[in-house]
View: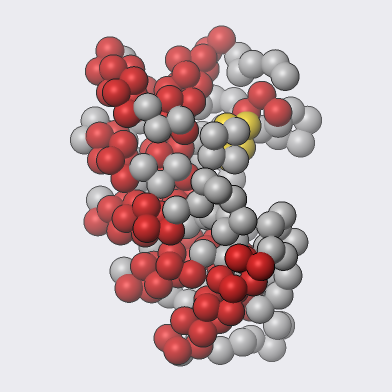
Length: 217
């Protein structure tokens, strides 16, 4: 499988502790080396090399620029996110794809045993309260609401809308979150019965909020 370069091994160890939910270990690591709470990883998954940067515990690929807060967000660990922010972790930190921790928190997989909507919502609400922008766009123009729609996370959609997310925002392909909600996203797991149920709920939530399909859909 290989391993991340030595320069990133300290961060990688912290990332694995967060992904596994080992809060005590996380606190020990950032207590001993405080900069790891906010330092971005220098290397990450790419088309050439991805396996060494996969966190199996949360089903997440780590990209260059990801911080410990990105990992805590993806793991839906609001308690660890709080500990990191208290040690100067930045809710607006961006990885090489332009994604912030809130993008990670808004992503899910209803088919996965790891998926926990209640914990996901708590993490989303905390990050926004800590200063994360609910309408931050990554390099593809996707906001956290786009991520939640694409990966079929209805409760995340509701939480984002309740805390300032704009359902009219378009990504670089011109799609709104509702446009993504009504089509096959192409993401693994979105054809499962659990994901389809979430898809129907998302469409209802967005339409009731006032969203309408664009001419592109």
